[in-house]
Amino acid sequence: MANAYEVARDTWVIPQLVLAPPIGHVDFNSAMIRGPEPVATDTGAPVHRDDFLATLASLVDPDDVRWLFLSHDDRDHAGYLIPLLEACPNATLVTSWFAVVRMIEEWPISLRRCRFVEENMAFGAGGRALATLRPPLFDSPVTRGPFDPSNGVFWAVDCFATSVPHAAVDIAEIDREAWQEGMRIVNCVNHPWHRWLDETKWGRHVDTVEVLGIKVIGGCHTRSITGSMVAEAFKLIRQVPAAASWEVPNQAVLEAWWEAGVDVVNGTPVDPATTFSCPLEPSP
Figure 1: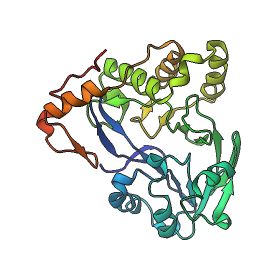
Figure 2 (figure 1 turned 30 degrees about the vertical axis):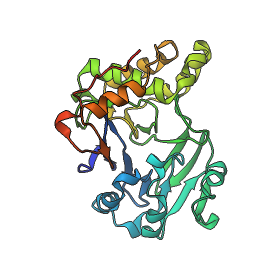
Figure 3 (figure 1 turned 90 degrees about the horizontal axis):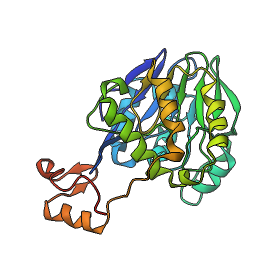
Figure 4 (figure 1 turned 90 degrees about the vertical axis):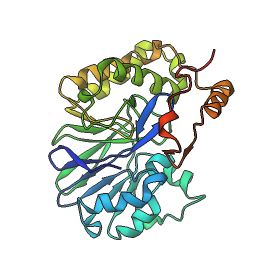
């Protein structure tokens, strides 16, 4: 984990970076909105749970957290949910009925601590009216991302995901071609159904989000996207239906990694010097 950083007024990203050979690194971020009623957005991946609360507590007293907005129940977003509910006794879980149904088989979630907010609704948080949007791309039926009209920040969840060659705060710090290719690879792998999209309908759906005048795009798997890069990010997302799929590493590549002495435990390479000495492109 790295230090939290502010992307807009009162809005902070809690960054986590995970090694993802052979494509580089992938972010597993969460966010915190400070104010009269602080809002934690997603709860981090299990691999970083020991550091997550400490980073959050550096931004706000856990007793003051009023809302826990859970975009969906995948482990990289909900990995610290139960401990965080315990650490933030005054917080209400903002989620949906179906999300709770998907989680309750494993986690004891009190319905008295829940608030159900569906797509294209809003909830008030200390003077903010946060809208809950369906991002253009998503990998869970319960995915919702909060949009804050007061500062133009949209938490896009898994949409705009990309691999990165190194840590950064803003996507502008990443090589442009590396970002474009990272967007293609990660979104094609995470949303394999992109091949069956009707491009006209897809474009209309993207329009409903882009027209909101978003100034900052944040998300679990991207560095912050700001300024002119926001329009470029939407342009790249519009290209996903026609993008060439990326063949994921197969058994032959896995065996090449073994031969190169590559292994990863809890996100940490056993031998960083040899991590990328294996083929960077999957075998045909």
